[in-house]
Image (cartoon, rainbow, N blue to C red; front, side, top):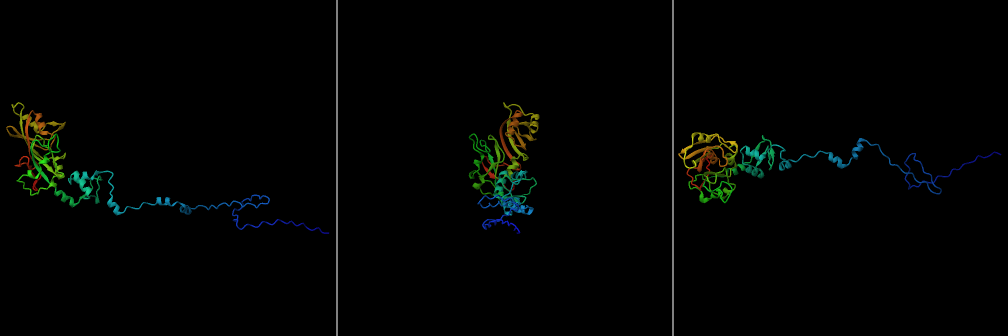
Length: 333
């Protein structure tokens, strides 16, 4: 009798739960299942695609890409409204003063008003520019400057030229309608605004008398009191030797003309001559504090009286003490 072959029956695999995700990990080991328990599903590793330049660029954060973009250029309107001052150079106001366009105060006022352009752009206060910069002035500023007045006053003894000091009044208090010289031929009508910003262009000692210039025009002030001024100023000086005796030697007169030093500075040449037996005539091109009195002391002279009679080509003339008049259009310093 023939022996039948034995049949081996394998247990049927459990049906896959449709709710369980399919196993995507190829070759992952299957953990052993406990008795009576269903085998646990293996962990599904995430697929990591190969990085490429294109994919990496797309993966950059939006903020990083935005930071790499160039900033947009300023609009023309913003450039016109806000001007960045030059990091070097000179202040525009000083350039205007050096070129004789206006005083420093006027320059600042015109810049603030918007009447000044530097190389075609509106200037701002404190702006710096190169010395060769092109500066344009609005015609309205010129018209305003033309309305500025200059007053010629015969200052008496006892008034100070500038601010009040030691109980003495400033000379400007004399510039009022009642003190205007009746023979003023300037044709200018007096207005209260003419006293605004009216300042002395030079000094005249409290114990001296004569021609004092007060002006609203910065160009005139700079011409008369600037460090490089060469405008002549003429004085009549009454002198005497202490004790009332003696006469001034010719050598001392020569020293007055040239050779004296004040404050360790050599004085510029002066024209000094006798006007009469007790009065000297001085013509100077500088104006140091109490200069003539100190010059006379150095040669042994005592000053009894000092009167300024001319500045440039403008003379005191018949203007009475304590009275004033306007500078005429045909007069120049």
